[in-house]
Length: 353
Ligand code: NAD
Ligand code: IPM
Ligand code: MN
Image (cartoon, rainbow, N blue to C red; front, side, top):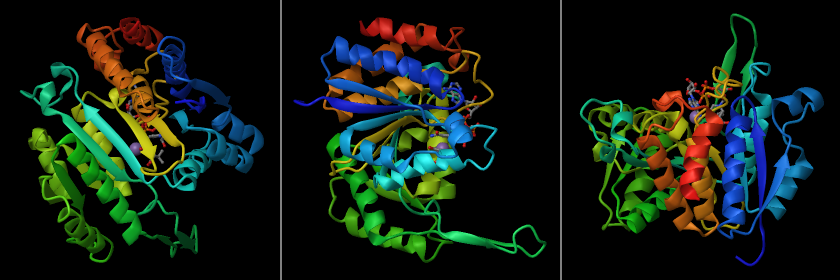
């Protein structure tokens, strides 16, 4: 990397700033000790900003992110004082849709046997990467309400699926599975959703024929939930629509030890857009302000960011250090430890030094 990589930081709400603090320490380590040419740019957006100025992400800042950064690192968004989630949608969807980040990649690899909630399963049984379509489906925001607030009201949310949108995420998942020599499962609800998910079926079969070397299968989403709990080792790469991917990624996170450990990246693979990196978890208002947030999801998210910046060996080192800290029980209560957020972050960072 010749030029500096400018990284925008949006800590957000709830536990967002608490885990962001730890993430920034890791970014500083990568910059100062590992020579990654990182330039940090802190932004104030989140619930407080919305409450004061009535805006989530100003257009000019969006344009500056698009034009001058390599990535955005996000904490979490969501605040009980904004029950309509307007600011969270404006920021999250503003970035995901505005930058056309069609691939939401959510890898879950269990690090410690005792974190797997299914009896008799070892950590090695849980190594699943969800490829969630991230720009359309039921998240497209097309719809409306009629006769709102009356007994006769109507609410419509359209499920938008395009050939281009489905094909590029299915292809991204197959490319990844081929590169990593992994199996793939496409999941939809084409037995019920006969227009939208019939398109997923047809695209899946067309793309799959180009990847005869990648073992692949299809499961309806209900069956996938069932099989994930019964036999998680069967699954490796999962590709699905936006809403199913959101749901499945929390289920898979639980199999791997919980949301406190699960990272995510929103990418436009093959493009030059900045990527958006964020833990899978939200702002966890039930934990906020108490030092109870597990920082490892954020640290692993920085690992994905390091890989995106061309330093996969740094991601591997972070994974190793996180595994060692967890194995030693030097972690937060959600994964069986008694450390607070900063000390649990230290336990990983110390092992990297
Ligand atoms: P959540 O992910 O915040 O919390 C779900 C459960 O996981 C809670 O029990 C929480 O305590 C636990 N948890 C989450 N992160 C943890 C961590 N780092 N360490 C330990 N435990 C952790 O989901 P929610 O409660 O449904 O949502 C809270 C708010 O966050 C809502 O406003 C929601 O819309 C928002 N949210 C935002 C994002 C995001 O910014 N990307 C993602 C999910 C939810
Ligand atoms: C996630 C979150 C968001 C989503 C919410 C906060 C809108 O759950 O990133 O998984 O549904 O995409
Ligand atoms: Mn989610």
